[in-house]
Image 1 (cartoon, helix red, strand yellow):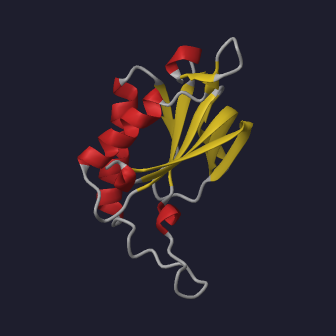
Image 2: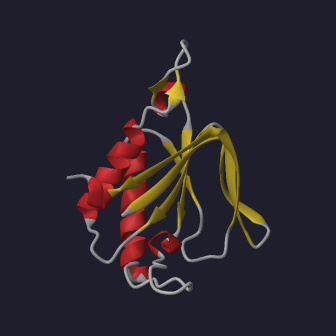
Image 3: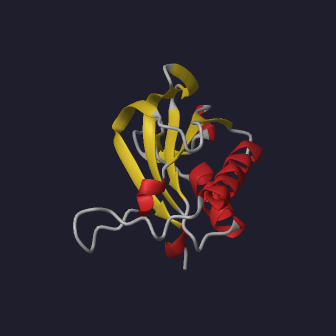
Length: 149
């Protein structure tokens, strides 16, 4: 499972002209699910996301997590995080999980974020979405469950 996490001042997701998820200050998480992923990958990334200390404290150091600043999380599914362009220029998505399994693990990730007590908004799984954000910093972190060992 892969996540691109961006510290944001605000972020929103629109589907067919309607806002389906939006947050103020917090984290935008673009989440991709691989064929090899399971619940433990979702739990690992959710725990890392919740504990990620990328917000500045009073001394200006990245020392605070999302809960510390009373922030929120917006999670958007993005299978293209598993696009492989090592051969040619057109991405192959062979490593991306099939939609049914990807949705199940995506929802498991969201449930784990919510279980932490954070407000968690989402996009619409498998929809064409317009994602709008103001990256604060900019700060962008890459997480990959394959790199946990």
